Length: 245
Image (cartoon, rainbow, N blue to C red; front, side, top):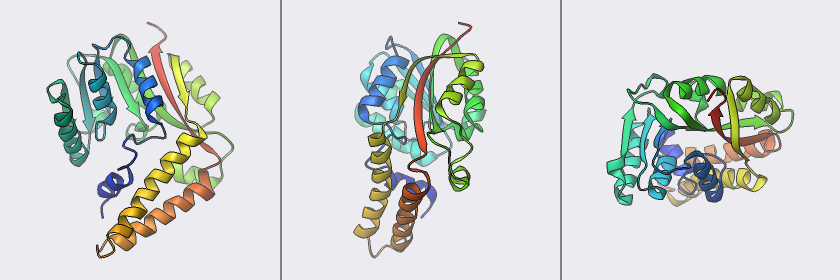
């Protein structure tokens, strides 16, 4: 089973691919989209979950999403059609780092996708290129709540602590106007949902040739979470404005 198929199964019961519950997503979008008639861009949109929620909540909003996964974009198109928002959504099948547009956007989104640009600050640099004056960026990024083990750093990446993360954002010319740190419940719910969904699929499809591999993957990922990074890794969502504005 390829990575995209496995991700689709893992996120079946948690379509927001970050440790955020529905209330947190709504509040972040409320702060990022204050008027409701903005042009919204998601760099690394996946299945378009953030875009779809914003479009459903704001009938005058227009949105565009960029992602390398044709499968995920196909899911976004199907969901947009079901919601009746397909005429206000444009999707681009390409690398987010290579995307360009003739018009700037009022809101640029990149939640849990900074790896596509090589980290937090390169992602903010890309967002800056697309952002209209007075616009807002909604970004989601991991951080270390406690000093991580070398194994955790190797597994998840070279993050820093929350205060230093925000300091770097501010030094890069941004002012946070809202933020949300994922709670222990949100973090745990996300992990249980992902690896539980994979395990359930494997148990429900014992005759599938991928069943054993999927079950092993679910067990491995669950063990890594519980033993390597559960007590050290956190996640923050930030709504930012350019300080110069």
